[in-house]
Length: 414
View 1 (cartoon, rainbow, N blue to C red):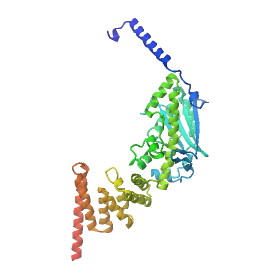
View 2: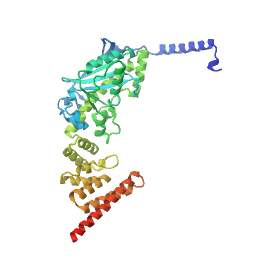
View 3: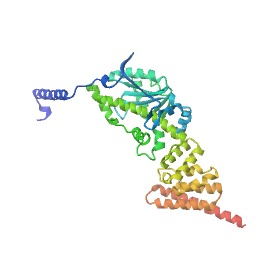
View 4: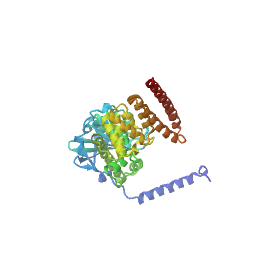
């Protein structure tokens, strides 16, 4: 007998049984623990209602893993613009910025996703303060956003980790749904995800924030809650008001904010001090400096990468910046061109050929470079469709060089 043919009495009996089972499960579950018992915070009331606020602080003399937060006071004002190659961020003072991270009811975004916990961090004298804005239920969103807006209006610089793609669009949408405007929509924004990838992706398997903590700062979280579980924790909280799992979400968010600040300090240190030691990191740093048009520094780092080992300059995943950097540079750059080619870079030999054809006028050296490149391309022809296009280009260059050489020899013999 299917469900559609059940009598009204049978349906009612089923509902009674289901309700009884739920009641038994509820009784077996341990009693709910109130939020205030596990998270030290306070209720804040404003014209839109109430929300819950938590504030903690870390002294700047404390190291976050291996990163000294005291370096906030010594980072040069132009370092962020070098890190990002964005002239608009010149003068970006991390001490005046707000660091932002959200915990949400979904990871994909969209109109149905809300930010139930919003963490802010900022330098305050000799402390790094973290303030966490929490809505205990959906009806508190208006009050939370109102309180958040009052805080954010003090800042005109923003730092996030993937915030340009997720946090800022989400908050902008939530403010608009509540007939408001996200105060930092037009703020200068340092999204650290992209600089982190440029600096460390060549060496690290992942550039997630926690992977960077482990790989760069010597930090490994214990008892942390995975990010993908956080939305369900909030749904459970709304239903049962048990704060035991929710307390772990607060700690997760706090750690993210402090790690975001430490990562900003560390990335700026790498740019200022050339702290890279692994050849892959040195090569990545050279590329960052080149994007910022600091050519002398980038060329020095490229040369250091080659001295440490050719591996970072080989392969399609690592563009031949050594060679491109050297073209048109002083005579000291020429060895770097050859080293770039020796590292197995087709483009390195191409750039070396260009250098000798148009700069040094050494056609024999240019022909030798083309022949080396053609050998590499021929080896890749069977497995790489792009190699056919490259081969045609090198064939044309080879023929042109032979014609130039013949004309030169003819003039010399006349």
